[in-house]
Length: 336
Image 1 (cartoon, helix red, strand yellow):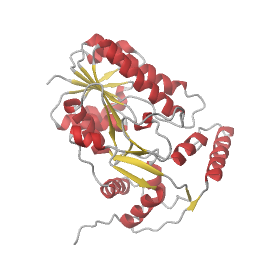
Image 2 (cartoon, one colour):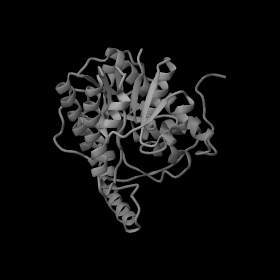
Image 3 (tube, one colour):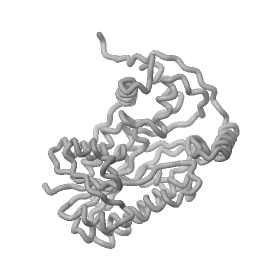
Image 4 (cartoon, one colour):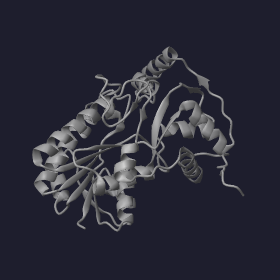
């Protein structure tokens, strides 16, 4: 097989894809804005080349000689004072990548989209074909929705095989931000408040496997949700209590109080010149919840999902090993 290019390989999802490809004996090339930050990948044998999705000529050079490109580069964030750089990376960057791949003679692009682009109404268990609600919860959701639409149009224009992979929230060793804070804060006794919601998750290794399967088995022009489990916040807390043996109590905030807390936190942070860790769009997204049906990836790609217990266990074990959590003992359900 020819060399395969991965954009975003220094990130959590892209890095997992690169390592999964290496495990198959593939020759992997990674596009990185800062090659000096990719020493771990280089140590694994990845050919790291300097480039940026906002500099299309660098993408074209990196893609030369590749039949397949995994486009996992992007920005995921909330509470941004100026969302335009995120939009540029996600939308303009994606169009640049598809256009550059066409010029470089790439046959297939596996694009890391997001489950958020589905835009399902509250309470709906969404599939790949669920109608969009018609409005956006966050600037991130809007940018990824527009990026996927841009990717589809560009691929059709150039005759490139495009497969969209739409992961739900990706969890696993190495993830410390976003919804991973729920696990970290719980284990460290910092989880003071909760809102009642439900959300879908996919294990990081399952996410990488789903991408690779999408390359070899995915139908061009089709999207594949990756979602292994759907849990409520109460179920998640109960699972962590059982696995760690630690009981934590948290106050459940009603919707108005939670939204007000997001506003206050954002105002205080910005007054101090900091980017908020909490804001209204983040709280609104959590309150809305997300439930996805990831069975198409199982049926058509052959992806087998790990259980929520396995996901939490291996994530917590990594946190303990890294010194990010103390005082927790990871329990096994296996008999002694």
